[in-house]
Image (cartoon, rainbow, N blue to C red):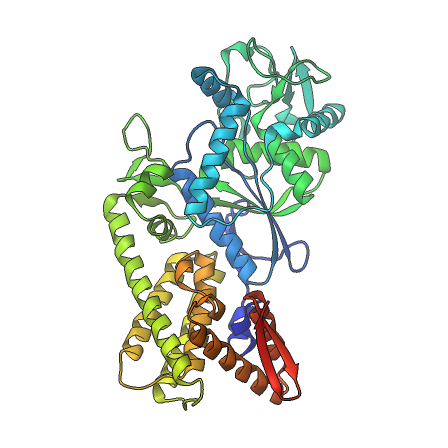
Length: 498
């Protein structure tokens, strides 16, 4: 829990978070299976090519969701997979004259470079499909034994008609749905066109693994069921992905998971909206297909991130140079405000090192602004992670702060430090302006460091005097995290670097 929440801000932090559940088509109070813990799975990319804007739309959206859950003090176990074997992988590897393993290694490394630039936190684990073939085979064997799957010429298919809940996520009747990944070579093998492949028999020249029913490779859908169960258990709290995955991928995951376990696979299904380019679907054939590398070569990655979170994650978002330019201007205003706060904070701390100032009307006005910001920001994020409203509340506060800081009244260092702390925490959720928000120990000027630490020591001493030992302990712990060790002696508290 963030330090600043120990005072008047704690009340707003206890509001109920609601999320939209694709399964029920409504917002629901968020209550994880295990108190204080969230188990979350996101479908990652098939690593046969460079990551593009559509990937960024989904991954940044769920990065913010994960960050806000952590901000709400949940311990989040976040898993994102890599699909490193499928038809596209095989085709592209053959085109380039490399193995599918070499192809996957290349694009996974590129993936991390791209999303590190966009400020995406690393997942708890990044399992690959090819690392879990044995678990997939075992899962398929159990489905066959229970009558939910059948062998056909070396392949294995899931018997959709036996799973009565099929279609509950996509709300499609079985006869109205298109067959999953129809392949002319497989015609006559399926007992029903809706049945989908759990295992695909080997074709000449393809990578393969040994299985009881013959050589081959797993189908696309089975990997996520197996890997989410292995790393998160069953059921899980959140399963995320783009709207294009609702059917058939996530529908099939439900079927092959719940047929085996007999209980719900996921509590909250969450899907991000589509991304268009100049109001058209992104497509290489239309010439409007952009990779993350191409966009971040033209625009600062933080600008791209701000653009991506400027729409609520379930809403469609349209990419254009005009929208990126707008995000660039907006980010510049945010940065300017943060830089102004940093300068005023350092100046106030130095000025008050030996002569503490008394709060003014400007202090009171800034504190009231912080209260309003905190309430509006959390209300927005508690409403299914409404980032555009949260950003609007942040912009409104920064405008007020600018007016106050450029006024004639002096503001105390304590108020300015609190403002930094709140803005730091809220920016952390959105993944913005991190390079502009350093703690006192990151300032290189030794006199400034000494002044800031002494001020925090005084605040801690006052907290202890008021018997607010929780605050005192938090100050000490945060300074320790920043490499500052406090030692209480008879003559007072002294500090040293760790």
